[in-house]
Length: 123
Image (cartoon, rainbow, N blue to C red; front, side, top):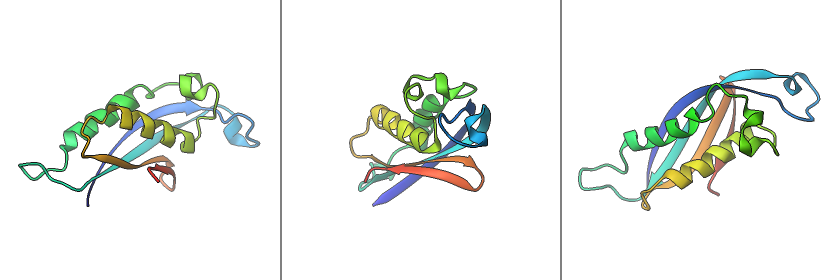
């Protein structure tokens, strides 16, 4: 099995509804997002999938979140824009946009700081 990972980031603000603590107030992060895909085959030139394809998909998703108030975005009007929910949202969006049936999204990690991430995976 081959695994390929790309990383990008975005800046956004959010509030965690019903959270008892500082994070209930408006605050922001410079989010870091990593995406891992897997495939069991290589194409004729020895690639599982072009990194550019993966980067373009991820940048397309993150551009819709960049410099926004996440609570105003459709998926987060009914659920908290937590790192966990962001990872799940990005995972689902990535799957929709990944057109190569031989490549499977393995996991998405959303880092809200240098020392804390949430991961959502295909299991």
